[in-house]
Length: 199
Image 1 (cartoon, rainbow, N blue to C red):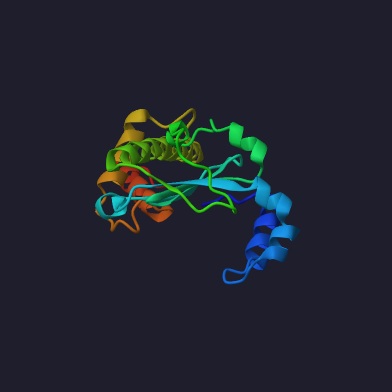
Image 2 (spheres, helix red, strand yellow):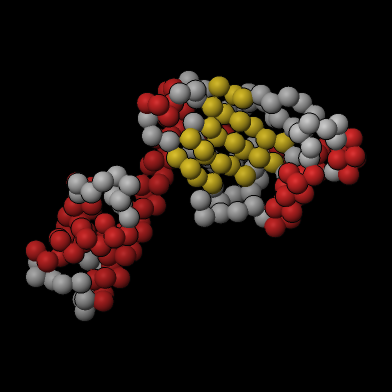
């Protein structure tokens, strides 16, 4: 995932998870952590059985109010400060536009906002487009650096870049190994050698 809770939020979460007794009365726990329990809330979205039909992801956004997690067919948005609940417009692939999802907290039961296959799928498509653009920027940067290391000036020719990306997309490598650094190097080498270049 590549991102973590802020240190103070980590300390709070660790203490709550460590001290909470799932079978006890938790009176002392509630008194000790009253302030934290009054501030922490979260929303959960789910499209049941979505992952049986389409691919899902494990992802955490680089934002903290709310923390937004994508885990399989679930999305969780977690707030550590009550005042941030008003700031419900942090972009997260369209989930922020769902305004009728209930906030869950310690004192209430958990409500999971159900989403239709299409509603969830549209937001997953937004994520795929975001990640694709991010990945393409990384590839573009790497290929330009390689172009420079090969002794050329400027940036790599767009046609060659496109050919490399086409090779990556059409490569028959197994899915678990596809799109890895090693696969990208293999595909890049294959294309560049056609032009007499050895990276």
